Figure 1 (cartoon, helix red, strand yellow):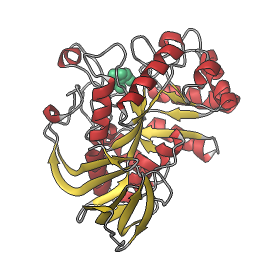
Figure 2 (figure 1 turned 180 degrees about the horizontal axis):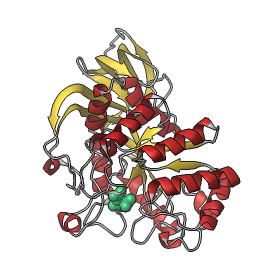
Figure 3 (figure 1 turned 135 degrees about the vertical axis):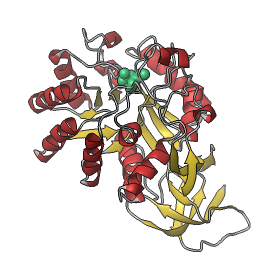
Figure 4 (figure 1 turned 180 degrees about the vertical axis):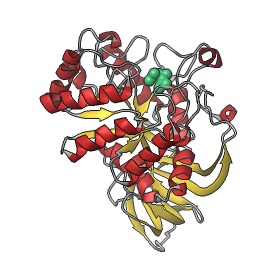
Length: 382
Ligand code: NCD
């Protein structure tokens, strides 16, 4: 039996923050308490001055595999995620070929499993080829995934979106909606949800008006979830190309207000690696998974949002949405953990990214917070 104690650190999850040791036995959190007894058979990792938290879960990542291996591969993308403190990620379907069939999805899942690093869920497209003309075979694909998204493209057809919503209710899956134009489509899709029911998640919301519409829907009792990206909380009035575009300071302030008021379910990175050539040719996207923690740690602490709030949005809620018994520092849960230095001064340096995508508008930005270790089922991956 393997036993590890993370000794002398601060432990934080969505519920609480305190000083405590963490005992991991055979990949499971077995005790969280002060001054845990260290037997001969225990490996001790001194984490004094550091913070132990549940590892992060990202509902929105572009791994580019298959088809765009010059931008990222399954392996580089997953290693980048681990470097950022993530153990669980959902890969988007805008690969080549598009992940609209069982072959592509089963292949990605099998290769990810063989790498045996982070847990990868492969989203399926909502429409064949993300063309918006014909819905995918939800029933068949549901056996391989619980996430469906035409991310990168709006689903223009009301009929297909409504069909997807009804299927999401019947087959119990999540539709991850890329609304473009954002506010207009958020409003339309809330209306379609009211008429059809279903499980709807709004991706990368950037504007106050869109968030307001989602808050109103939640206040009315509609069951919707919403994610915000780190880059839309840090960047504004900046024309670096990303979908949706970086917004204004007023939008950012509103998003932060929405987070404080409990309306935002999770932080997702929308990690979108591109080559320098593709960026120069206008490709939208930011390579962000390795700086998500320092960005959110910085923005949240500057706005008086506690580490518990960060843990709720980066671990607890997305893990629940993935259906994983993780995301809290709770005895009996899988030991999927990060050890971070909340106070480390860091400067974003894309040349050091593990990701093949070095595309970020934040190079040189000073932030606070560093991921020191990423642990999956008790195993140190970083
Ligand atoms: C995404 C990508 O590169 O796959 N880019 C982005 O700016 N978010 C797709 C998209 O949403 O346009």
